[in-house]
Every structure is written in structure tokens, then in C-alpha cells.
Length: 428
Image (tube, rainbow, N blue to C red; front, side):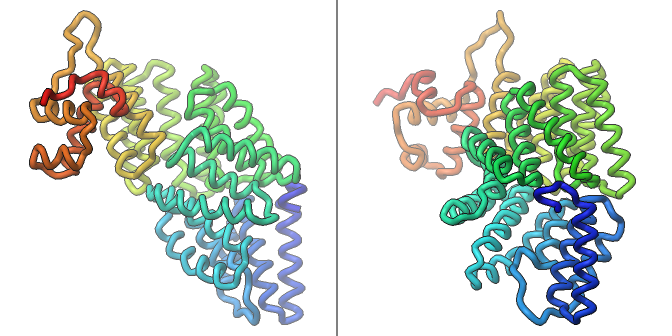
């Protein structure tokens, strides 16, 4: 009813009937499974009793083991993710992974790994997220499991922590598979991942097609809670990029009202980020900058979302002709993305910063390196390793890495190959 028919109301009613039948028969194990499914659907539908139903599932004793991904503990972790508590989710998921692996349940292992990947990504631990996503994808591809769930997770994680081109491959594969299997739930999710990636890579027209289909599917499936799948700010940002400002405003207003009615405050900062982009599109750069600074402050516990907001702040300040503030925001975003190994976003932030640090036409465009930066750059351009540079200059390897990072930023470069053509090597 939920996955193939896209009818969570009917699915929720069926789960309620299953609960009653199981409890009447004294089968608490089945009752726990049914209550967990009912709570899952109630959350999707925005039902206020979802938490109470989940608590009932957690409180009932079980006379037989359950698959780790069908337990109320797994759903508790999913809800923690929806509420932006990734560390709480991770704590709940780790013992479930041990249990799934112990019993040899591949499907449960994949589901728990996917949830762990999302939790680690949300917390900014990109390397761990990639590890879990790669394991989930490998297990899926080695079995008869549907690829759609693992592809969704791989697309999200690769697009933030790995390679955007590979992320797009995963998202498109997930969309195609979900269509073939008539899996409406993961069709929405893979289309969301695809739309997000297309927007992030500067293809808003293509992103709009994917995200509008997500909106249609979510409406069809009567998904009411905006914290479950965060497509709303992505679609609104796409509409802003295409100049459809009134449509973007209507979507933002509707989503804010829904979030307020359900008490889902966690969805508000990304909506504020998009509202700021809308303000800037209307020429109100001051209001936009204030919104973005406030949203970034509320996202300190989610470093990648904070970095994305700071990057938007940089673009807004540049449009408002406040280059110093724009550079500071871009630098902060780059530092966050680099520290958390969010490589595609770090490249975007580095490109933004290099454009801001470019000297206007008509002025001396030669970059000014300090003597230490110049010497380090010359050795690197000559092909000397970081370790040997550190030995030559009697500094640590970390100091060499930090110095070269500054050199790359000043010169607007991204690799040693470019450096070799930009800096004359040291003459021995």
C-alpha cells in the first residue's frame, strides 16, 4: 500500500489493524512490527500520535527476534535524523549494525548502513559516510536486493563527499530502477538526489524537472511532514535561479506554515537560506545577508549545511558589492568543507574564493607571496614531495600543506600541475 500504491493512509490503517489482531492473539512480536510501521507512516502523514505509537512499540516485550531494520529502535534512529540529531541516531544504529551482521541479514545490514551513512554525513563525518555508503552499495550489488535504496544513499553521500559525476550515475540508476519496480517511495528519493545534484552543478532547468516530479509524487503519497525528505528548499532555490520568484515565495510560505504546525523547527534554517536568495534576487542584499548570517549561526551543529549557507552568504555579499565580507564568508565555507572532507563543495568554495581574490582589471595582477610561500611553492613546482619540502625548510609537513593551500588560493590554482606552470622552480 505504501511503497507501490503510494497510499500511506491505507497503509497506516492496515498497520493499525495488524496491531489489534496481533495483540488479541498475544503475539507481541508482530504487534511491535505493526506498531513500528504505523508510527513510521504517522510521521510521514504528520500525525501527532507518531511518537506515542513508537513509544508503545518500544515498550512491548518480544518473544522472537526481529530484523534490525524492522525494529522500533531503527525507526527511533530515523526520527532522530529527521530531527537533525545525527549523533543520537548514530548511537542507536551502531548496535543494530552489529546485530544485523551477526544474523547474516543482508537486507537489514544494508538498511542500517544506509541510515548510518546519512547520520555521519549530516554530522559532517564525510569519510565515515562514504565508507558506510560504499559497503551498502557493494552488498546490494552482490545480491538480488533492489538497487534503488542504496543508489539514493550513494548519490547523496558521493555528491557531498566524493565525486559529483559518480553521484549522478547513482541517482539516475536509482530513478530508473524505482520506475521499473514501481517503488514510489524511492522514486521520490532518487529524484530528489538527482535534482539536488543538478542544482549544485549549475543545471537548474534540469533540476526543476526532477524536483517538480518529487513534489507531485510527495503530494500523491500525501507526505505532510517536511522533515522526512527535504526537497522544499531545493525546489524553491531552483525556482529562484530560474527567476520564478513568486512561485518560490509561495512554496516557502506553505512549507513554513506546515513546519510550524507540526513543530518541525529543524527545517526552517534551509528555508531561511532560500528566502535570503529570494531577497537578493529582488535586490534586498542587506536583508538577505542578515537572514543568512542568522541561519548559519543556527546550523553550527550541522557543519555542511552551515558551510552551504556561508557560501550563499558570500555570493550575496558579492552581489551587494561587499567584497571583504564575501571573501570572509567564502573562506569560512572553504575551511568547513575542507575540514570535513566535503570535496565537491570545497572545490566550489575554492572557486568562489579565487574569483573574489582576483584583482580588478587595470591593476597589478601579479600575486604577492611571502618569502616562505614563494620558497615552498618553488620546491613544490619542482616536484619535491611535501615531506622533503618540510625537511628542507625545517618545518612540519602540516605547515607545508597549509602554506601550499594558501599559495593555491592566492594564485587561483587547484593542483601541482598548474603550480608548475605558474611558479618558476627553485634553481639548485
